[in-house]
Length: 153
Image 1 (cartoon, rainbow, N blue to C red):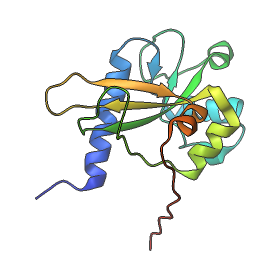
Image 2: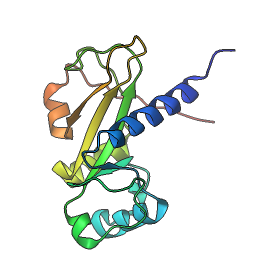
Image 3: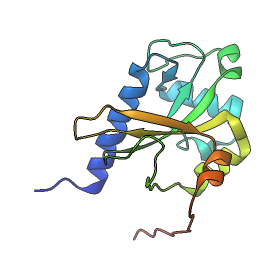
Image 4: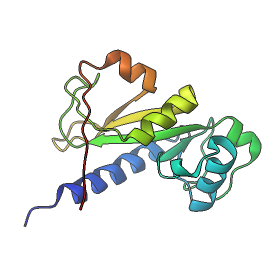
């Protein structure tokens, strides 16, 4: 039986996060306690609790982060990970992704303090690669943006 799209997306995002942490350049997953601190002290609105995936700091610590100081938080950038296992070239030409309204709202609220990191997980043996963009960068580079409403019963 084929994997569901959700299972495939979860697996792809997990690989993307492992790749980013493995780079050793400051990408961190967060425990729920650290996520609560970020939401309380940086964002100020609990509706954004699940609107970011990782944290980028100027230095690499053990990941996931289980604690964060006020100084570290002042230097932190929130990260929303978008991943694909399709063979997308460097530069992301042809990359298609979706974004939730709350991710857009948070990106607009935090500006450069939230970035989207696009990770390409090649299943054809090519090296993984990534590109980091702010919401402003995405809007500038986008060839097309359309609204879609998803409804669950």
